[in-house]
Length: 62
Image 1 (tube, rainbow, N blue to C red):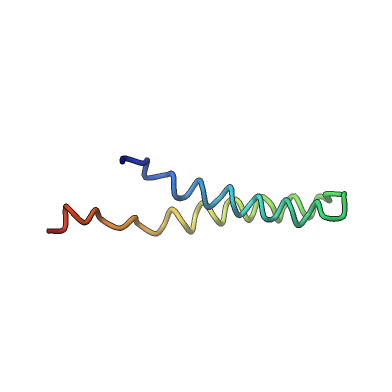
Image 2 (image 1 turned 60 degrees about the vertical axis):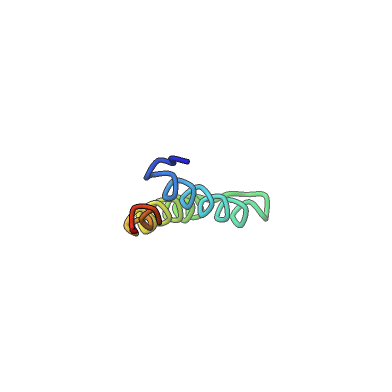
């Protein structure tokens, strides 16, 4: 199965932003400060996960 090298980073960014959105919307109001937190979670999840390379395929290591 071939998955894009960006799939891991995009998935991590969406999950991080989703968690921040659910926490921000818990009181029914999303403030501008919470929007910055959501954006930071998205960019942090994207950047930090993209920086870590995927493990090489086991067939190519042998």
